[in-house]
Length: 377
Ligand SMILES: Cc1cc2nc3c(=O)[nH]c(=O)nc-3n(C[C@H](O)[C@H](O)[C@H](O)COP(=O)(O)O)c2cc1C
Picture 1: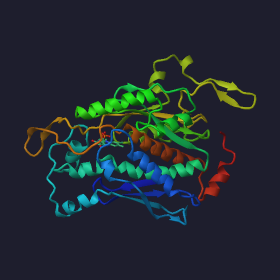
Picture 2: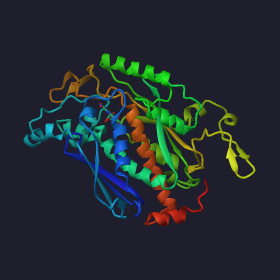
Picture 3: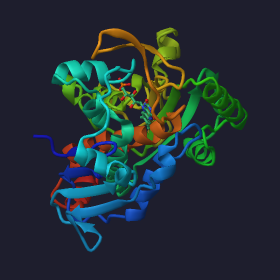
Picture 4: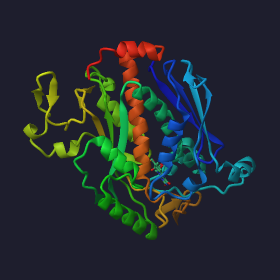
């Protein structure tokens, strides 16, 4: 059984989202505002749709925390959907028209066939990325655990709609600070202007955009994950976690695709002895070798496809009639790459928290601190 687990429940236009987190040690201080800050960060970003103006996510803790500290019991979280009053009566009456024209790029078609439905609504309600609000809250709990051990996670955007940023040669925490001040989460201010223009242009054209973001973890000790089995490899677990984010279709550990174009002598991170410890001349492996964290920053790059709901209709088929039909538009984001980066931070935090607990786990934070005592940095 996994040492750390979470489940979420809830639909996009239902009353709320719920998460249950099992396996957090007792004695962890829970900073509600840190969770709410991450929820607000997920809601931001240039290119979001009208829904984000309705929702102002706040988390409620319903179990597992007493007087601001975990007690070792499952932690239950709830995030209200402020849009719910607009839907409640329709859900009760069952009077919403059926959605019978599946939208390309969504779960609609495969979901309707899989669950034997003549309406895509139950599929899109749960497939919606609204669920990622619950993941961000769960990830914020994982970040609180990681930060007790000096592990920090942040993100920035490197590409939107084909506009490529020139990332300045700065310490990653400075890149995070620049990203935080940018509504496209991009540390290159000049590229950010072009990204915004590309989003405006896509909006005017009734289109949508995707992009690429980078999530980094600092202070990760050597030895998380393992080479001994495929499903214990940290790189494999991170890749699965990132691809589980709706619309994320590609993942790199470090600059993997660039590395694939270079000879080995220009890729592998050489060791040097500093006089006191072993150091590296580069980090092109993205902090993981043989499925094990190697003490360098862990870097994951993720590619997000363009948002599949477009104001310009896409060709489809009405499954009720078998006739050609065009997709209809529902309020939607034009670009959500900055928000997806925040979800990426949550998934990185979750995988690292799980791996940290496997190696240094205990029932309480002080058990973990004792086990962590001699960790190799
Ligand atoms: C933060 C975030 C926000 C998203 N917002 C939208 C949206 O407003 N409209 C939309 O059609 N898709 C949106 N998506 C993407 C869809 O949820 C996703 O593409 C769809 O459910 C199909 O899943 P798949 O792309 O993983 O195959 C968003 C994704 C994320 C991560």
